[in-house]
Image (cartoon, rainbow, N blue to C red; front, side, top):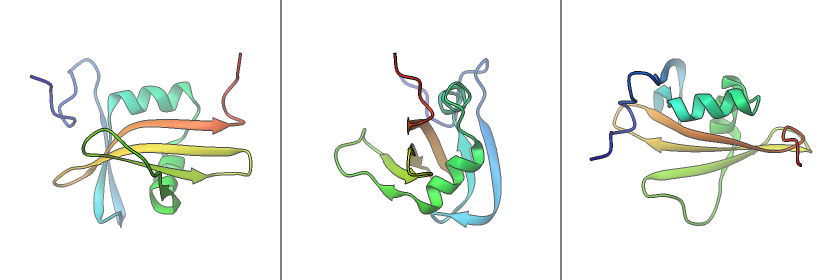
Length: 106
């Protein structure tokens, strides 16, 4: 049986952030261990993810069940996609994907 999002393996902890002002109706945002790893690898800050949640637009098309993908154009050359899940008391950040100037293509 798969583990719920909010119960990561003990060796891969998540990060919980309490917000002074709600985002999408939630005052708690939990960055899952996968999202934290991708943010570090892809040089995306926590502030960028929170800004994307506030200013981004939902990406049309199919997403995994229960997940929503939003896109925020940080600059003319860089956009950030954030995949999140609405849980009972918090938003769970699943992954973060930058496109544009932040990714080296080989």
